[in-house]
Picture 1 (cartoon, rainbow, N blue to C red):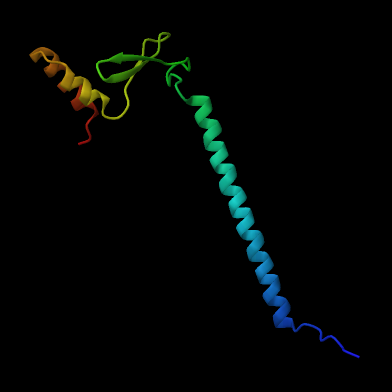
Picture 2 (picture 1 turned 30 degrees about the vertical axis):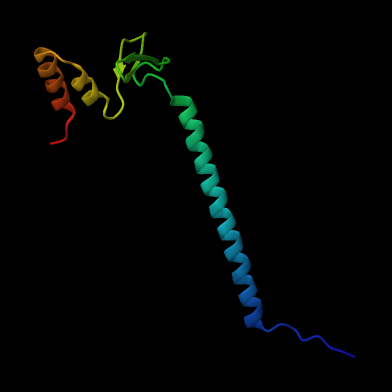
Length: 109
């Protein structure tokens, strides 16, 4: 008759560590998945909403620049680089100086 040997304590420890590592990795994956879902849900709540009053933003096009505008509080919101593109589009001397002054307000020192 064949007898089965009882696993050694080091073998049991090895498999216990492997099982714990698998559970840790699964928990990490679930955490990352939940964080990604939370970011998507937050984006859905705030995308194209006015940061000042919370109403929907409307997109107006001026040349090749899309300007997000709130008709409730009359806020105007520009994405990165759009102010510079608007400045390039303004052809007159006075508009260029005014747009340059506005642009300097937002430049980092």
